[in-house]
Image 1 (cartoon, one colour):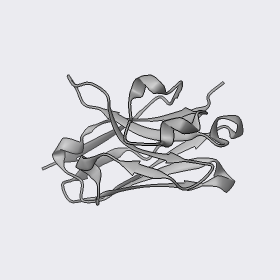
Image 2: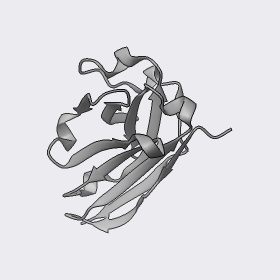
Image 3: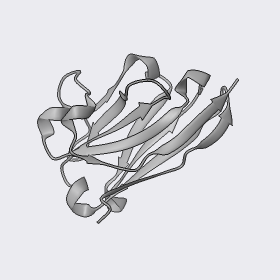
Image 4: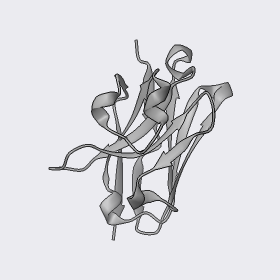
Length: 128
C-alpha cells in the first residue's frame, strides 16, 4: 500500500519555479513530521525542509531559505514544496518522508535516518 506519493518534478531553467506535492494516506499524514529530502547523483541524501502537520512548525536548511516554502493542505493530506529561484545545484531526486514522532519537528535536526516512510521520489532538473 503506497503511503506517500510525490508529484510535480520536471525540468526548468535557472531562476524558474516548480511546486512539488506529496500526497499521503490519512494515517500517515495525521499529526506527522513530514519532510522533503533530495539526493543528487554521487551525493548523500540531504534534508531540505520539514513541517509538522498537526501544527505549523516549519524548518528549512540554509541553502534553500528564502527560496523554498513548505506548506500543507490538511483537507487533501498533502504537503507541498514551492521552489522559486531555482539553481542548477538544486538538481536532484526529491523525496517526501514522514514519521509520526512530533519530536522530529523540533530543533534543527533533519536526518533521513529518522524517517520511516518514504515516497518514490520525483526528479527536479535545473539547467543553467
